[in-house]
Image 1: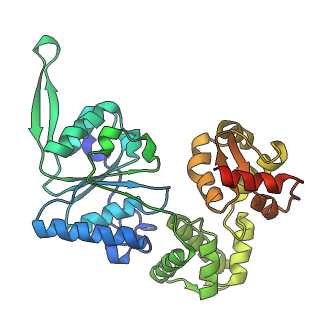
Image 2: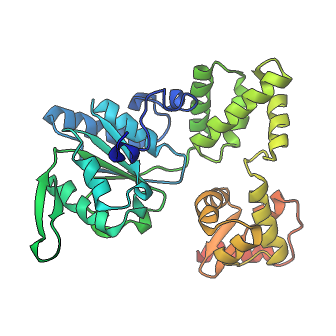
Image 3: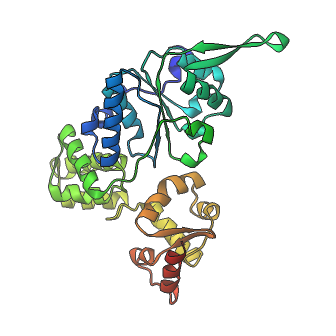
Length: 347
């Protein structure tokens, strides 16, 4: 394997990851949820195929585990195009990006994950590649150095990020299509769990599907992970059939409650309530208190806690709501009910 191939982090053949890839849909019709997003992407794909042109550059934003990489694979399949997958941290120098760009064929889907972490010099290369389908390359050194432009075939860049606000504006503006993937509803997660259970040949009743959907944090990746773990418990404890009792036993052993809050989620709420009188407390202080990185706190734990109404973000820091006190079975101090209402009105 040469250096350029080592920068490509994966593809969608089942040989790469026999555990997860069978669950990844290959076509847009099989992608569960995100109805409006799917409808729009279907139109863009049909239009591009009708003109026999590559799909316009696509920017995907959203929390981890919602299907950004899966959508890149679907786009490649729908456009009948080659897919090259890498991540921004793997691209350290301009020659890394140039090495990949010079191997793509016409219509290739080039997927860069975590594109917000792309180095400025590589961003500059992408500007020209995205607009003019050329890359600048410096030949020689010192006074004799000169720049030449190397043409590349028309391609589609798909950039994915969990932090859209950290993507440079000049780069973002060059994407013709920009979409945000939102957290999934319980009904959408039920569809995902049913589909995955069918593929994995797991026996599970409808009520159990609903319980797992409620515990999946609005995230397909979590739903599939929980389904696999419940399969393990069912295999050992119940002859392979997932029932309500198996799920309650499994979730209890994994320290996950009925709303999908894990041990660290509850620790976050407990620390804010007990150590900081319900808040406000800054993200860095909170991260130190729970022994977790700020990035993990903001990217993984907080979005779901905010969505469930347990935490508010305010200019002064994080505060918990009365729902957090109720969920943690902690008595709400006098006066806190009014403070929560005031914060909802202000923010």
